[in-house]
Image (cartoon, rainbow, N blue to C red; front, top):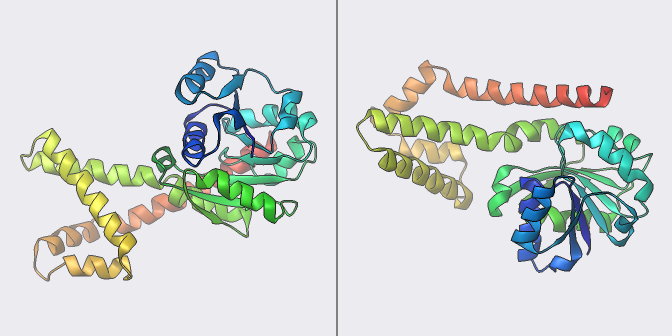
Length: 270
């Protein structure tokens, strides 16, 4: 499978690196980016070809991954439209809906929308996918192969669910980092060094997450097993409840979902 990437940002790098690890040859990958530094970076790191413009050479590729900023996607899609034949188009631009993208592509509908997250940079991403009805089984398999190079994937029947995905897995790593920051700050206030605080907080998250992954029990049961009545964990969780921490996290995720929907409206109205 030959794949062209339009845009050379971090997510494109994550996918390219993953595809190369999965056995795709560098000669089968190409990056198009107007930024010369980005082109040099991708050539130096991955030894894949690059160019500055979208042109007829795209006819050689089976799939085109749109990895540009959402605000730039309309111009890119309009430029890309005349060069599409049968290629699968995958957009990883947040917020841009399939209906708008297909319109910008001149009615082309072999399109998949993907919502990855930053752990893709280390091959542990989570990507949700939604496709138009024009994407057949082989197209879905191709999309799975591309995003699967950077982690797990999940197909959605309803594209509107991508707003929820954005709020949970798309923005979710930031919530985790936020909580890690808080634990590190608590450790420092308790007298531990910067290095000790970081080591404890990160290792605790890593171990707890892996336990949740490997356990057949729900996380609520795992939490209860750490919590003894009248003990230290109970004291912490009681303090969280008094401060409505769980509700604040839920409200934050709901706010993220609402903003994702709003961004889609704004971009579609442009």
